[in-house]
Image (cartoon, rainbow, N blue to C red; front, side, top):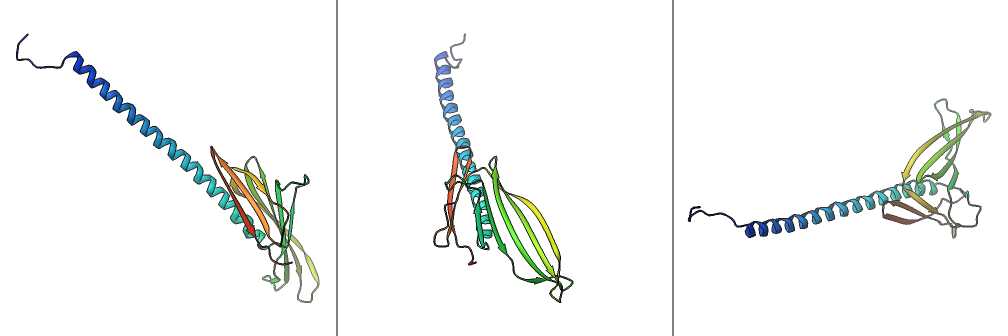
Length: 184
């Protein structure tokens, strides 16, 4: 060997490998923490979005309602179905017939999905006031998912309180909506 030859000793190489391993371990831990935090944040935002969407639709219909009923026969406030009914304003159709619309909005949730089932019944009368007939239309709309509970205590002081809960992963979001239905 030549005396002026320079290189690394085995100890120097082992020290460098140990330092690189420590830095890589710290970086991997940091990346894992960021990914895990991002997942939790995303789950929370999805839960918030689902509760807000459910709250919007139920509030919208409850403000129009003249009748509220639940499928609650247990004496508790928790329900799996909410039915809201009201009569719309008198209107005229294209043939100038008087039309009276009755609305029934039924909210159900099953397997963590909230559905809105709408039924509109229209009674038609001609210009002489004679009954022509009744038509009915029905539709169903998927409103939200990850819904794990809807609590509806009895109406007090003409206020409907609805508590909606959604769960996504470990994230749970619960909001209570206080709604004033229109007077009967």
